[in-house]
Image (cartoon, rainbow, N blue to C red; front, side, top):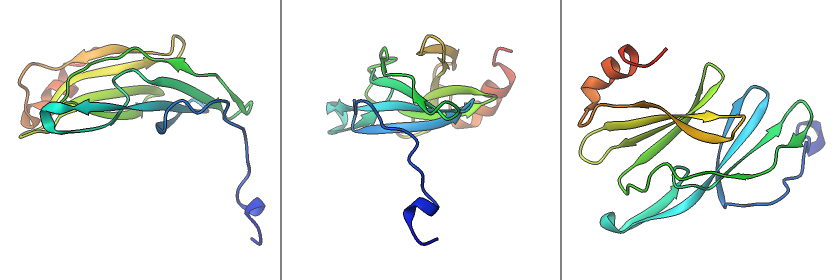
Length: 144
């Protein structure tokens, strides 16, 4: 390997940079990009970049080497204490909203509709759940 071209190949040019930060997952031969917007949290004296407050989504098709084009997402929540995790399971993209202030609590699980390009509520956790209840809630009460 003598040059970058031996191990790195440019596959596409992004059309417009919409958000400074992105979360990226690979699902069904596509790289899915979820923008992160700055979310102020004045109750906690800080802020951070999150996906749940309505930035954009886009994808890059690794088969055709084309971009799908950006689409604005609706905000899922405006709660200041939420954290988020985006992951792929069984060829579906999910976003988990949780809080880890004091104890770990889960609030809702959203599935990304790849055709409509929006988050849809998949599962809402019981109120005041704690980490020790989660395996029961998550694995025994999820819809099929």
